[in-house]
Each structure stands twice: as structure tokens, then as C-alpha cells.
Length: 236
Length: 160
Image: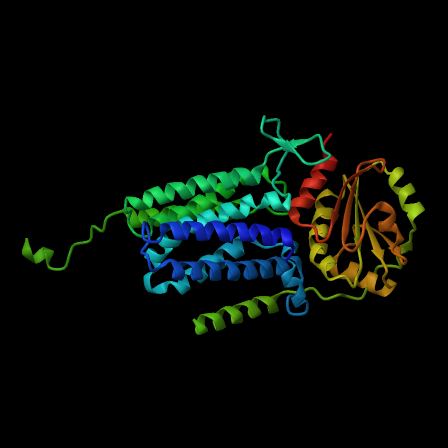
């Protein structure tokens, strides 16, 4: 892993930790911070490895014959595979109380994502497609001004984090915050994707799918259970 | 926890075993030698923007970026000239690398001494130079190039 990426990872982990510490005893139980932190870090590491392996396989490189290549993260990480692996890892690690612990981690995870995108400042990788907007900026030595697309993503995710922290104070139904966090991350990616120059296939529909599934989970959690209670029929 | 870890490792290894491209017998001929003077002439007379990638078959990071460069060549090969400079290498190794990663859309040249990248202002392997038509250096990226940087710099080259 190169140092610039390591810097972005550090910013992401730092923000995640700050939000978790803030939530401990406020919107999360005071004693769950360590469990949630362990879960999030494990999920991030597994996600990174699986995403890297998926990217290598798609590129036609066998990770067994070239294990050293796994460490060259800059060679590419498949975002979809990484996200899926991270979510599954967290769910497996917190299976005793999935909804509650997913809600406990959600704002911190979104803050971590914001840190990762904001870490573009260290990686000199903030710029996207060309733009004439007043805040568009040009890279060194170029006259072409561009969207600071990663900063857009970071700001949207920071705003979402603040929103989730406020929302958690109002004690929403369990699972709703976590699903909303997944939907937010997917929508932010979907909205900013057209401003990212890329090579090869477009993964937008994966983000749309993630947002749709998360939206369906929110609806499922919010709709009240209307099935008859046992014995209700006899008592009426 | 231990069971989860074992399951994750098993899943990873299964995934890993699924892929891989084996180097077939190379149809690539010997690479044409190039030196510092010739490459500067080549760049100066190019009427297309040029992406010049410095690689070697013994270079691990070059393996990581090769698939991305192949994709970029497939997408932008009509408007950008992709040149590969193989440095301090053997012809057999070079031909195997080109075949393994399907980099036959590039114009590959052979620099046994490694003097070409130094003459262009680069150091180490891999390197990716981006030149405007006529040979003016637009950007030099040292180390493994990622998708965003590659796409951005190609976009810079193609902007009117």
C-alpha cells in the first residue's frame, strides 16, 4: 500500500473513531464502542482484501500465483465486492443483535467513508470531469477546471453523518438508521459517479440496486406489524 | 470468530483459484530497440497525444497496472497513441509479459540500458508519461497508476 492511500485510510479510521467515541453514552450504549469499532475495522479490512481480489480476478491476474500483487492496492479495488464483503462481515460479527449494532455503527461508518473521500487531498485525486462552475479547480499545470468530485462526496457524507446523529437522538425503529446509511452511501456514489472520469464499465446500477434494497429494508422496518396477535380472534 | 475467519479464508482462496490468465506461447516478435534520441524524435513528430508507459517483466507493480492500461488502450486507442518502453529486460520476458496481459495494442519498444525514461525525466519503474501531440510533457506519474489518475490524465490530453 502506498503512503498516500495509507493517509486516506488513517483519516477515514480517525473520523470513524471520533464519531464512535462521541456516540458512546449518548446515542449508543457506553460499553459498546469497542465492539462496534472492532466490527467496523474487521469489516473494512475484509472488504479491502475481497475487493482487491475481485479486482485482480476481473483483470485476469491469479492471486495465488502472484500473492504479492494483493498488497498493491493502487492497482484497483472492486468497490461493489468490497462493500458487500464489508457488510456481510459486520453482520456475521454482530449476529447476536444485528439491527441494534448496525445502527450503532452506521453514523461512524458514513463518517469513515467521508474521511476516505476527503483523503483525496493527500492523494491528489479529488478532481473529476471538466466544469466551468466558480468553485471548479484545475490540477497543477493545467488550464482545465474540474469538479472537485471527491470533496462533494465527502461533504454530502459529513452532512449525512450529522443528520444520522440527530436522528438517533429521536430513537427511530431499530435497523432504520443502518438501512438509511447504506442508502445514503449508495445515493452519494450514484450522484457523484457521472462526475468521475473512469475507464471500463459503469457500476452505477449496482449503487442503484444497493439504494433500492436499503430503501426496501427501511419500508419493511417502518411498516407496523398488522398480523393478528395469538388469541386475539378468540377474545373478540 | 475462529469459524468465521476460517470461512472467510476459505472463501477468499476459492475466489482466488477461480481466476488467472496463463501466458500462452508468445506470438509477439522481438521488440524494436530504442534510445533517448529516437524517442524524442518519435514524440516530437506524433500528431496524436501519447501515453508512454515504462515497464519491465520483472517489475511486480507493472503487473498490477497492466490490465488497467490494456482497458485504457481498448477504450482510447483510437485517439491516444499508447507506447510501452520495456527497460532493463530480456526479450523473452518482454514477449511473455505482453502476451500474458494482452498488451498487443501498444507500440512496444526495448530499452536494454534504461536510458530512455531517464532522458525524459523519470526515475524507476513503472512510470507513465502523458504527452500532448507534438511531444510536450503534460504529466508524469511515478509508480503504479490507478484508474482515476489514468482517466483524468487521458481526459486532460483529449480536451481541446
